[in-house]
Length: 425
Image (cartoon, rainbow, N blue to C red; front, side, top):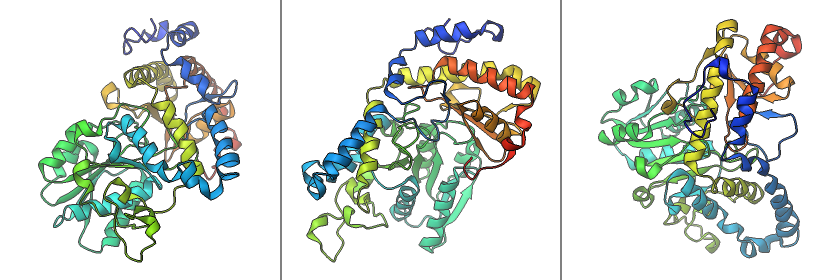
């Protein structure tokens, strides 16, 4: 019956009913985590792959930071409340989540800024090579930043974009860096980190992974995969809040030689010496740039602390079970209404989301959101359903597909208000 016994053994569609999903939730080993998040009654939230839910403890923590640490402690709190060590402290916790050593991960800046820093540094670490290999349809900021690095460096750098399943065929002796997203933001396709990293290393290239749709959703082991560099987002599955600081990873063997281009004062070996001359810190701190956003970083730490309590084998088991059940429930709707699965059927190739193509995808999603079931849309035709295992319930799947069936049957999506595009989709 329920998922704990054999997570990928799904009953036939005829055997799936409301009672079945209620029983799945009763046997959910991660069910207790849901109570740590702010979720309104009647809300089904399937958008944690875009913005995670507010942890209840973050409200108390924010009040403490604002009223006590900032309000009373003022500038003294850089020392008395250890604000100065936030990037390293949270990075050390994140290291356990992404399979790295504590001194290889640090929290700072945004994903885009960290991509720029590490991509530019990778070119310096691999002199004489002229290619950066990535995939078309990668998350836009990844492609924009890589092209920005190319334009900024001013030497003959070539950006080569090829489909992910062909990547290894295009890595050669001219390749300085391979840069890929571990779980694709549209399709939810998860790449084989170890195999692609090995292929890059076999040709002498460095490997950088964007973990924005992986961290906190699927098991990640950067050290085991021998990854060189990585970046990741703090506001999706880590539940750090909108615009939460990002993080970056540099493998131990590269830290000493790595030169990042944004040499701000927090990356200085002795920031408060106030020297005119820049001297990079010796450790991962050299990747820092400006002042830590203390309030935002403190909120992120709450989400990271919750994630540090999680058994990732259980997390992955539930994630796959949620997506398998959802795909099974959606099969009749694909036949009746023309939804096309955009996510791999093979579980090992799937992150923690399921996506469908439909020509009226935007309007359909707006109609669903109107019913307090929140997924999202990515142009031109992708409906995304994210499954954050810590707070998504099995009954949410049943209720979502029932609502979607009604929307399609009654053509509710065809109302003008659902076809009007908002700035954020």
